[in-house]
Image (tube, rainbow, N blue to C red; front, top):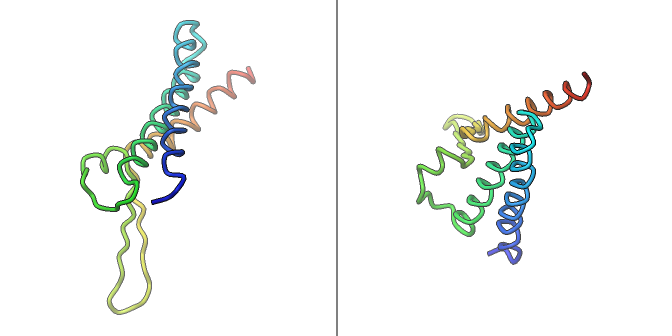
Length: 116
């Protein structure tokens, strides 16, 4: 096991806690939807990363297949029998796709509001 193992999930859960502060103030002061959504996506990604580092700390056994569909990252390698080439298909989960679209969209909304 990695000697720095408890550091990564601890920092992920601590950062998720820190993200809730602007999220709560953003709702109470009506800052704007983009800041609230950005805080929400960042919170979800921090929680998912923290849970992934706890679940798969020293194991690659898939004992939580439902969690893999929700928040894990799967790497599927297919090799051809005739050639030595390996095709790597990256299958992203729903949360990764949502955060890959949601975070840049929120940044665009914040930048547009600052420009206007």
